[in-house]
Length: 181
Image (tube, rainbow, N blue to C red):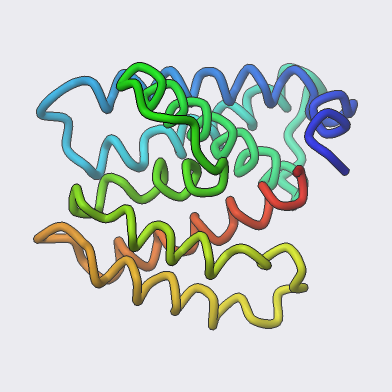
């Protein structure tokens, strides 16, 4: 299924795009405000994606069915919102448009990484390049590889648990991104 089919599907459609727009707006504003703790800037958009997806499910269907589909809708909305936010910040800074997967990984991980982490982000993108080809057998190995790269360029004070959580989110987002591509 490509992205256009996904957005047009009855299950997600406009609801996912609206949630993604809210996530992008939140991320964009949080990254512009100085003094916002990294934890808040990194996890509030994810919380908003899940809350917005659940709320849209409640409004649309009148009930909430906590399922894998709802979970992936939230991850997809978060990923799309992050992609839009990172792309918008790059455009405003005058940077060239880059690889979408790179922008997604950068948006998710930028709060825990040093400023000069582009080479490490490139390594993560290379690790994830065939993530959609696999059926989950190597997820733990991929996650450990991503954790290893993130750990090598983390900011001071970032814990291994935070790195592991970000790596898991990167892996889930990359898988969903690859499916929708």
